[in-house]
Amino acid sequence: MIAAIPLPVLVIGPDDRIRATNPPLERLLGTGLIGKHHITALRQPGIIDAIAAVRSTGISAKVRFVTRDHEKDTFYQVVIALSDADVVLSFEDQSAAEDVGKMRRDFVANVSHELRTPLTALLGFIETLTGAARDDPAARARFLGIMAHEANRMTRLVNDLLSLSRVEEDERVRPREQVELTGLLAAAIKGLEPQAAAADVTVRLETQVEHLSVPGDAGQLRQVFGNLIENGIKYGAAGKELVVTLHAPAHHLRLRGQGVQISVADQGDGIAPHHIARLTERFYRVDSHRSREVGGTGLGLAIVKHIVNRHRGRLLIESELGKGTLVSVLLPVESLS
Ligand code: ADP
Image (tube, rainbow, N blue to C red; front, top):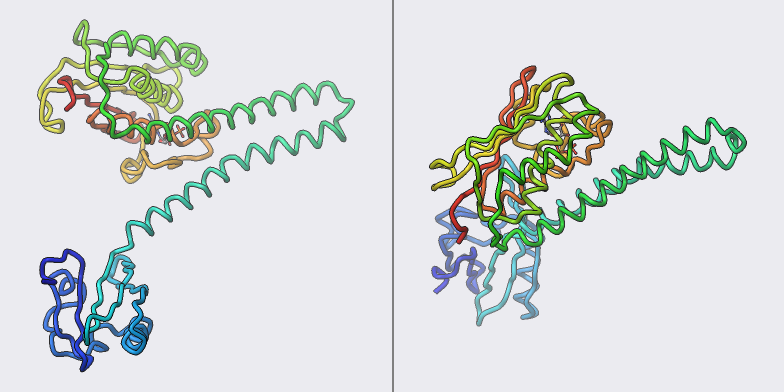
């Protein structure tokens, strides 16, 4: 019967020896346990004491059990129950829940840290303006400028956090509209013209097809290309070109079907290979100082990745130090099922 249970299960007989195990338990604690004393197999005092307590009181118990291999600890919640004269243990892997808990704590710590820096600056300037610089119009004008800059930074962060949570919420809902990509890319570029001009980057759109519609959410796709083009402007090189290309539809192995590639190629400093896989993590930045200086929140690519996932697409980042970065989005052109 226990062979049919997917959780690791261990049965200890009245003589304290192991009477039965199932394959998941053997993967956890090893084979050849039948007939051995349970202390030999379990070895952790917490669980051994709990087995004795369950046997004497008849009341079920839950305990934590940790296994260690070279890479990491795995946490199990073990339910110990009496069944006639046998003690039955079932092990439930809690690592996923622990990982989620850790991610949540890290996220809160990151957000707090990101907000604390501009808030500290604002409070410092308020103090100076109400004190030492109260009657100094030149200082007042300068400090108010910096305060506006810091407040804008907080607004961008809050907006990106809201976007991220909205995008995560409907990640499993397939988009149903048809979105025309040439117009969408042209609009995204137009919206960033002032920023491109200020950074002295020329943005050029190359289209290999006239009109191409894909199933998607127009607002979200606009955000994807807005974020990627904005990154190309922020991290590209002054005086150089940023090329946005809408490729002709083709069969893409990565999509296992027909898809379209949209790529954004800059000629900036590029990104070292070991950073690339982590860029879509929230708040991951290659150079935090530079990101903050150009108004980055560290959330842009995390938002992009979620939206691309929702569209069943792929995000590819290729880069070479000193040459530039090519970020591509592959989107399926056929209806999403
Ligand atoms: P940010 O708001 O910091 O720009 P993103 O999530 O958009 O956040 O990007 C994460 C990090 O990836 C950036 O801080 C930057 O270090 C790096 N990055 C993104 N795009 C580029 C690019 N085109 N060239 C070089 N580095 C980039």
